[in-house]
Image (cartoon, rainbow, N blue to C red; front, side, top):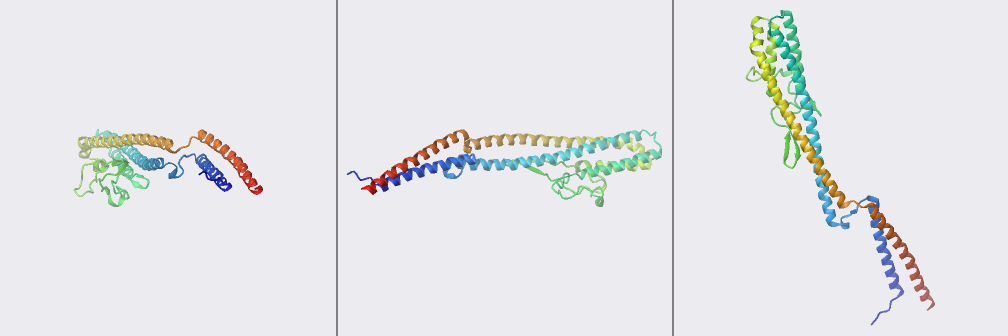
Length: 308
């Protein structure tokens, strides 16, 4: 049996259709407003899950990028100090070469010794270089100055590595062991260690003495020691350079992954504005037509009911 279609049924159907069109238009309007096709998980559950994964990946990559930038700045500060130390050691080498030929007067030797003493203090000052409030040559004891007036030439840091995370389970050491070059002079537990500070102190003492034996020591021993120190310094500079190369490669890799994930996220959730606007215009036209048709249908049924 065919049931009777009542005005109430017609009205309910018309309102349901209008509400459906209204919901579709609201969704499209939100996409236009946010520029995203996914504004709540129900819009696209799979797409929403993928967006969460991509955003998590981008967050991790951002952290790695910040770590690389921090490590690069740290390594740059260390490299700059090593270059300054190299220049000062080379200056000492020039002074010692001039003094070792035995032609300078006692007063000239003492003046040269005073300059070497000043250069030694400047080298220790460079060893206390800081980046972001941390001492770059103290190993993991980054809050402790490697060399201080209170402890003389004794090295106060340690030889532990300072690393920066550049990827999952991947770290790069950003510090160099400057104590392998400078040592602790004669302040260490074993006394004089023959490293750079010890050599500089001996040179200053020889120059201040001005004796023939002291001048001979400059030529026979200390110039050779300075050459060894410069070789060690070049090794540290090479290590710092390698660190910067690794950080640069890591930065390039991270940037590539960020671009890939950003593109994938855009494909997943970004709205095509031109297409979405066209859809919205069509939905708006359909909604307006539904309102007009619904008003006509409901009005006609009501008049029919009143006249019956």
